[in-house]
Amino acid sequence: MMKRLAYSVADGAVVAKRNVIKIKRVPDVLVWVLMSPIMFVLLFAYVFGGAIDPGGGINYREFLIAGIFTQTVVFGATFTGAGMAEDMQKGIIDRFRSLPMSRSAVLVGRTVSDVIYNVLSVAIMALTGLIIGWAIRGTFVDAVTAFALLLLFSYAFSWVMAYVGLLVPSPDVINNASFMVIMPLTFVSNAFVPIDTFPGPLQRFAEWNPVSAVTQASRQLFGNLPDLTGVDAAVLQAQGVRIPTPSDAWSMQHPVAYSLIWVVIILAVFVPLSVRQYKRTARR
Amino acid sequence: MNDEVIRARGLVKHYGSIRALDGLDLAVPRGTVLALLGPNGAGKTTAVRILTTLLEADAGSAAVAGIDIRTNPKRVRERIGLSGQYAAVDEYLTGYENLDMIGRLYRLGRQRSRSRARELLERFGLREAGDRPVRTYSGGMRRRLDLAGALVAQPDVLFLDEPTTGLDPRGRTDMWDVIRELIRGGTTLLLTTQYMEEADRLADNIVVIDCGRAIAEGTADALKTQVGGERIDVTVETMADLPRADAILAELAAGEVLVNEHARSLTAPVSGGAITLIRALRRLDAAEVRVLDVGLRRPTLDDVFLALTGHFAEPAADETGGDRLQ
Ligand SMILES: Nc1ncnc2c1ncn2[C@@H]1O[C@H](COP(=O)(O)OP(=O)(O)O)[C@@H](O)[C@H]1O
Ligand SMILES: [Mg+2]
Image (cartoon, each protein chain N blue to C red):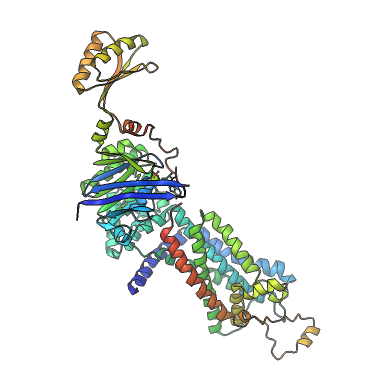
């Protein structure tokens, strides 16, 4: 068992190294990975920003950044799916499958090397955010925890897309497939608009949506939530400040724990599922 | 242990309602080359994929290097090398990086992997190109690199699925040379091909496969004999020459003479080889038949296929990617 794990890690490292070489040789993907979050930050901050009031006297841009973080790392999983699908299509998977290597190594290597994309895009977004008025108001440890949680969630989610990548007939399909999953997940969440502005049923969905939990956890850890303790809401309201109704869902009360539960569930389901699919997959 | 390095019994594989393999038996003795010869869609790739553990058969059993493929696929993978129908190389890596990666995944260790990669590049004429991304390689170079990948761990058994399909004539003869050298080294080889000539040149034994089933088996010579012996082909200059030539050949032929008026050619099955040919020429000359072309011909494997299946072996319409979409 330990030996198998060691082989999986060693082989996974070889595959990851190969993927990293590819990232360096095909920088177009990297440009896209770095540009799209900037685009999103600017679009939401300046185009929709004026129309959305997060409430509690919080600046929308400050509210927005954690949402963009989550959206981007979830979206980043698409690259993992596309990478798997491309390897399938180009037949390199056949080579791997004919070798006496660990059966999980290709997936491990792929998901691990794609963390690079997410680290880079989070870094770029953080910089962009700081420039346009985002701030980290919590402690250093909290901020690091927030980044770690974002990356952990994106890692788990990349296994979902890796699985999808093994199923679809070509890499082109991945973008559409991920769009259909990721758009509802990110838009019916608290990533871009405050959760109390959704109508009833959508609000329930948004509250229990893992994307909301990760966003909520990040906001909490970065100190980007309105702090209404010791403030007279009525006074604020009289000043024209919208007072958000805090959600009493357990998921929103304990967003870090709830996010971690999702990470565990996703990995527990999609790691074995993907490895099984890899074993019996055929080149298309 | 018996000396059959590859042994398959009654392999069956369905894809939905398609029966890709329909009870295929194979036996390849140590150090020999078996060609699996058949047209596109005959089931060659399916057979190779099953024997190399990429695919599970619905029924039947097989052992490679004495190891059961179903119960011990991983040990089988340790012993085999595979070069599939389409080169399974990474375009973004260099040739060297591809081979080094494969070596690492065979767990050869860092030093061994590196030196083996350089050694193979040299051997396959890729030394110069070794540090360029594979994206810049020609089809022939990719095939050679893919074959080199199959040899990284010096396997006892090698599977080559249509190693020359899609190559230009030059690339094909280059590949034949490479394969012949491997054979000389004593590798047991199972090779698939759509080309009769290729099987004839490279293989000790040929299994002709059609619709997932072996329809004939034997050495190239045995197969040719099975279809009939030699024949004399004569082409004459004018239509007027045809009847006289026909009469002369009929006297010497071992069977019916076929006349193609359109091509002004005749084909006569004969026995006695060159002696009969000389005799025929003398008589044709004496009768003042103007002969344009004449030859003694042994049947090609195309003839074998036609005789066995009643249809020609249709080559893939698009040889470089004919069944890529399947
Ligand atoms: N993945 C697949 N799905 C469905 N049918 C397939 C698949 N692979 C092969 N086939 C079918 O199985 C038959 C044998 O195919 P294959 O083994 O690729 O033949 P060959 O390699 O001799 O050209 C063909 O009819 C082909 O269409
Ligand atoms: Mg084939």
